[in-house]
Length: 415
Image 1 (cartoon, rainbow, N blue to C red):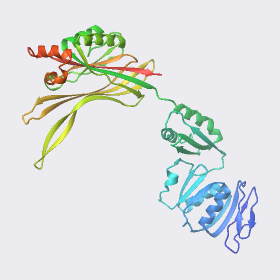
Image 2 (image 1 turned 180 degrees about the vertical axis):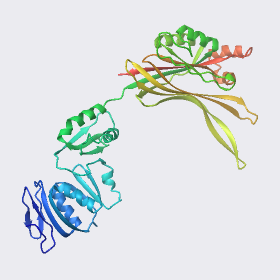
Image 3 (image 1 turned 60 degrees about the horizontal axis):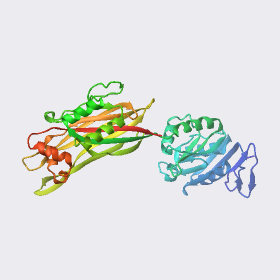
């Protein structure tokens, strides 16, 4: 009959297996499915050690868990007894795989919390199987968060994230394995990559207009044979700048036309950046300069640099039928007039929009730069050797001329 011996030691009796008594200590059979347990004035630390051995789990706990325990349990598994003891003593118990960590209430056991993602609050006797699922493409932390959102997927099991090897360690019921693996395989897919090619050029207004007509582009209007045209414009101070959007169907035709005009000195390409971006990620292409500004703080002059940039920020999202949605942001800064205090004004314009287009099409952003900015640029000695600027310099002496900024963006899907 179970009870307490003269040394106040815990005595248990298994239902489906025997216990072996040696001196004043007991040892629970690891094959016992259910146990009966009676105890009075037994240190909690000793009870945890014995139950962990019976449950075949690794145990880490504080050394000062010496509260006396009174227990009378019947027909419980060792794991259930461990959990009930944790709740009764109001301890912080962390389950992960075959490991149990025990700490005082509200304490933070970093070793367990860094690995713990989710666990069963009340361990049951359902057979659990251990799986190690390495991920090929997705990040383990992100997949774990998605699985955690649906608690029915784990069905009372446990999950550990191994960020080093990008794998998931799962201990789940056998009946849930097939469904869980199918869901994880569905999430573990490679993101498609999009190659973004951009070209930034300047041309006189009449050349820019003839270029668009030659390519069949009508900026700011519905395009012929296109179901993905978008028209947006921004008018700056005194109408100095307009940014408009159109689409070009043939990227090859565009390159040939631009090359011919650049060879004849009608168009100057300022930049031609390229970037490879994963779907849903942001790609940034930016060019510009920093402008110094002087501030007076407590009688001391302080110089601060501000950026004047021409930049594109593109976030692609691949759609069906060889289409792509571009989340596009355009930044057009220009150096303005000389102020009375001797500093330069900075003109800033922003455009943000979403455009749906076919892969391989070219998105065209057209607009006009301030004449003052180009006048200063044309007289910069480092540009005098460029033939296009020599012609413009001669014209500039006679009349003021307007120049147009053209930006071309072409997305291509990378297999």
